[in-house]
Length: 68
Picture 1: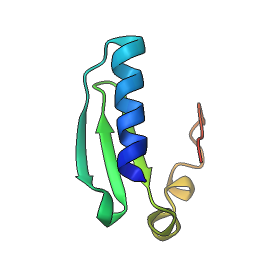
Picture 2 (picture 1 turned 90 degrees about the vertical axis):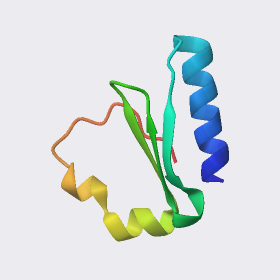
Picture 3 (picture 1 turned 135 degrees about the vertical axis):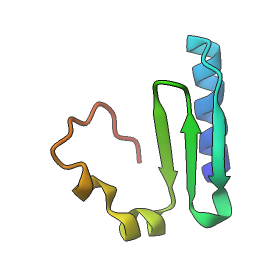
Picture 4 (picture 1 turned 180 degrees about the horizontal axis):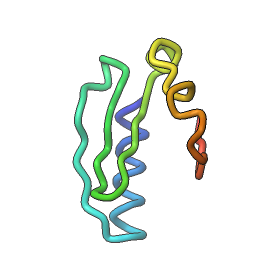
């Protein structure tokens, strides 16, 4: 599932904004990072989201977009 999400993000970024991207990580590990240059997207499995709880670390930051 994470691979499909990563592919969709990469395709959209390329098609709509001309952005090249790189993907780091392995979907089986539950965490992928998509590097779009000035934008970095983290894709987590539900288990990894619960484990790392990044929302708590960044709770004072402004949420621009949340997809689940």
